[in-house]
Image (tube, rainbow, N blue to C red; front, top):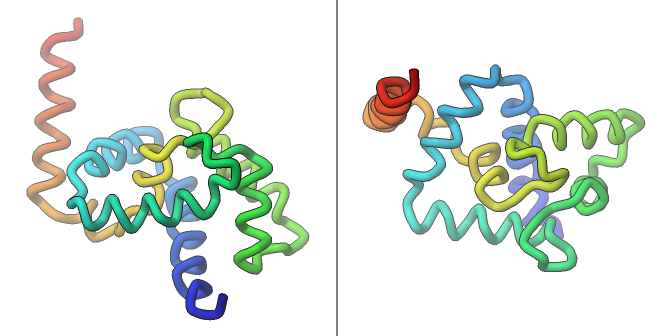
Length: 133
């Protein structure tokens, strides 16, 4: 619907920004996504469910392609964008995008710039590096 178009535009914009991030940036983003408020999680889950056509809890390449087309992104470069998004969003190598992967790619970028969130993510990384040789 027309009211969903601005939201879809924002989601696609966030996805495109996410795929341009370095691996470290994506890892930190994933940690910060775990700190989202219940309201933010609910909103992102709703968007995720719109893309997850068969409601199996993951978004496949086909579901992503269909969802982007429904949101008006049926341009010539769509297939390249879908493949690129899948390659970067699928952080666990499962061949699909789960809710956690989707949330870290589509959360509001302001979350990344909050000093408190960055400090928490750094502390998690620091703890892991102290444990691992």
